[in-house]
Length: 174
Image 1 (cartoon, helix red, strand yellow):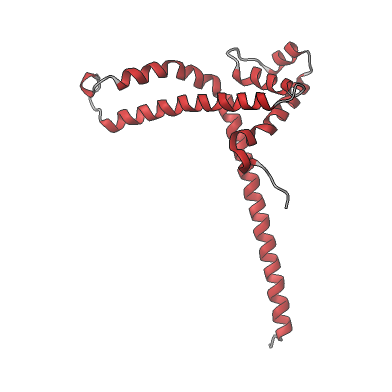
Image 2 (cartoon, helix red, strand yellow):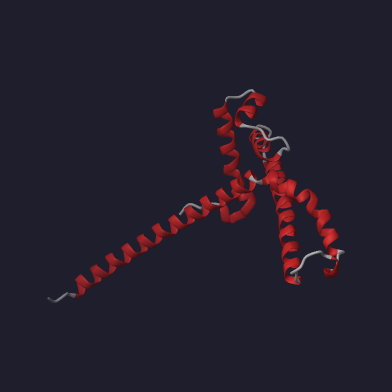
């Protein structure tokens, strides 16, 4: 079987188009997964925010004490400098994450229009306040339906990726 130059060109163009289409589809899928992962990470951070704050309240004092304690003063059989540094780094990361989330939530609050502050308030009650509010509690407190509370929470979450991750979170049209 003999392929003419015209047929070869047609086959090459078709294969190239399909390869480009498949690549773009794969890239779109990866970008969507990246966006979804970021949103999940934000939700996960906020879900555990209260526990992280409670954990960190004592950490700042602990870090200062740890800085001023020599290895000989520690009552641990098997200890080394690396494990102490690892503990300090973990505690420092926890504190840094609390400050990071607080800063991002403050930025979100400042970015809200007067009308959009209700979205922030629902988010704040659900995840940031010392008291843990259920969706029903939020609805009762704000005189809205629970479905409205969920909708407002979703609207708040749609704004957060850009605030947390900057331009990388923006989906540009092709």
